[in-house]
Amino acid sequence: MNRDSQLARLILNFYREEPQQLQQLELLRTCKVFRRWGVLYIRCHNRETAAALAGACQTIAEPIARLRLAKKITILTKNNLLTTFAIDFSKISA
Image 1 (cartoon, one colour):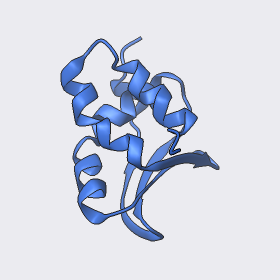
Image 2 (tube, one colour):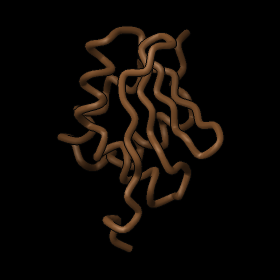
Image 3 (tube, rainbow, N blue to C red):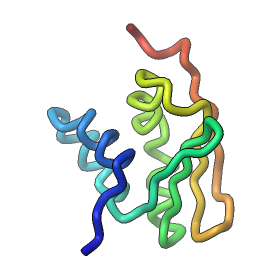
């Protein structure tokens, strides 16, 4: 049984009433999501999933910024770095 990580569920629940964003982030269920030292890591099984989530990084960043869980988002494929995004807290409305 493959369970979603708690952080992945948090992000998906943030968009539970917005089907377009929720569909865009469905791939997050297949990834391992964890945080360490102010960085949210998303470890994907393949490059296509990682690239799709990199395109949705602003959508992922909003709930993380609102809860102040991390300062950066890093997307990995296996243990290879694909991309890193800094979270801009000034763009998040209160």
